[in-house]
Image (cartoon, rainbow, N blue to C red; front, side, top):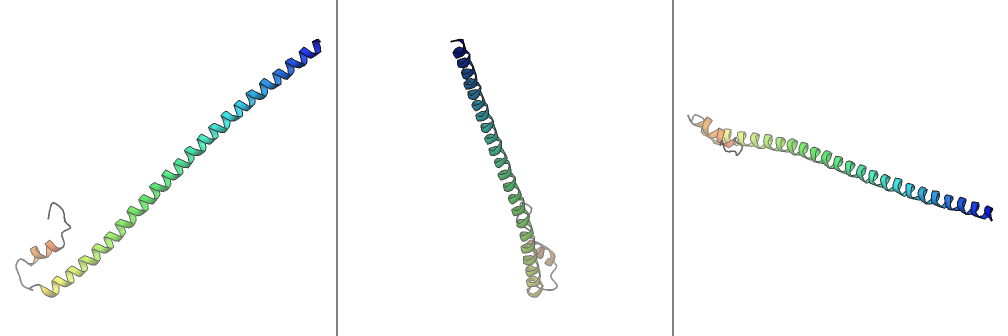
Length: 104
């Protein structure tokens, strides 16, 4: 009968260790899942920041190109259509080249 009690104790110990191991494995899996989600969020945020920076850069590039084209067109039109010897020519011309701000 003693051998049965010893066997029962060993079986109980194995079962307890097995349960502890399962609990530990689940804890590790949960932690890995959390880490994976954190990394995904960081990557997504990084991609958004990179995209926004690229978008801002392209906006600046295109707006500068557009403004240059508009200024060239304004200059050509004013040179062709304004009076050549007007004392206020510089003042009038500068108004056309002023980007709308509080200063204009």
